[in-house]
Image (cartoon, rainbow, N blue to C red; front, side, top):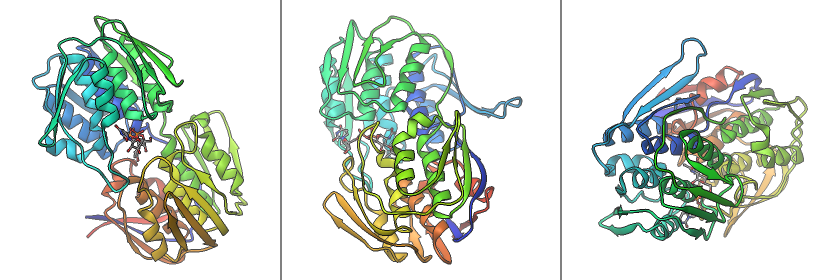
Amino acid sequence: MDCFLLQGGRRLKGEIRVSGAKNAILPIMAASLLTRGECIIWDAPDIKDVATMAQILTSLGAKVWVGVDARTGLRYVRILADSLRSHEVSPKLMGEMRSSIVLMGALLGRLGKFRVYRPGGCPIGLRPINFHINGLARLGVRLSVKHGFIHGEAPRLVGQEIHLDFPSVTTTENLMMAAAYAEGTTVIRNAAREPEVVDLGNFLNSLGARVTGAGLDTIRVTGVRELGGTEHTVIPDRIEAGTYLVAAAVTGGELTVTNVIPEHLEAVTAKLREAGVPLEVGRGHIRVLPGTRLRPVDFKTLPYPGFPTDMQPQVMAMMCFAKGTSLITENIFESRFGHAEALVRMGASVEIVNKMAVVRGEGSLTGAWVKATDLRAGAGLVVAGLGAEGMTVIEDVAHIDRGYERMDEKLSSVGADIKRVRM
Ligand code: EPZ
């Protein structure tokens, strides 16, 4: 098992380039199944989830190549799904990555059927799929959910008006993909507005689909008969960017994150400024300036453009270094405070009351032996370890590697004392 050894107290200084967004490339890779044409996806992050999605696509019969362009140094994923041999995703592969749920829409669009294993819950919640099931049923999909498998079949997909109970990101994405070839127009109301949904809409349109309204709460998809190939560059990862800004803030450092679309993380930068982090926002970069003096802030996680739940653990860790009480309300997932226990072990004072965490910041933490329970909780513990006094050991960093490209190397390059060790 890989662990991180962190010696806290080193100020981060320098520049980190943000990679392509995990939550954009995963649905886009799935969407490449919709066409027989070749898809080249640029700025692919070198993360475990991309490798897992590549394995899944290959198991279905697609050809997948991953490489680095010699001229630009950009990583790419090249996918050719000209002939598929299966509509079934193995339970093992489904179990490795929850977001493989987005394959339902793509397989429906291309083959009119799918059989996937119901992805399990995870430390942040039960992760039900009722919105997905209800939405696909509206499009005429006959579904059966038993023995842990979801089987969907639709001799023909007919466009409908669908109102989501909640602006679920992957539900929105599944419906967009399933609707790409449906007869007529599908209207998705109360749709998720995340930038990753917009990126998927742009990708689908570059294949020849007819998607309008992505990024708004009503998305329309008019079915077409044929889709072609494309080249597409995924948007930068706004959560990776936010994570490194927070890491710089807790060390009192001076850090520039590049390859950023600042508009995608306005809720985060606004909250960081409120918390006493001086920021300079440029066209494609954001810089933490020297002089951070952290103060407690309250925040609630909300669907985009509200404060993103995927930044909650990292900012909770940062609030431990402020002096005073912060109230954090987690509105998206029902149990996304798993990282609090590790922070308490590092000396934090955190009390959980239903959906709210009360953090009584004392201005410092001490290093300890902790364990990453999920991707963003792990990122939060790295933030805590960077600012803590002494050594922190973080076990099971495979969770972090699922969504952060070589986090240890990126942090070392700007002065962090962080080492990856195998135990
Ligand atoms: C996406 O997950 C992201 N994952 C998550 O990022 C992110 O935290 C989440 O959106 C934010 O909403 C990917 O894009 C791959 P949801 P998703 O459907 O689509 C409930 C990360 O760390 N719900 O928007 O699975 C659900 O339980 C990950 O990168 C139902 O009740 O999230 C949650 O409470 C973590 N029934 C809420 O809706 C359903 O059928 C929002 O979930 C679906 C969801």
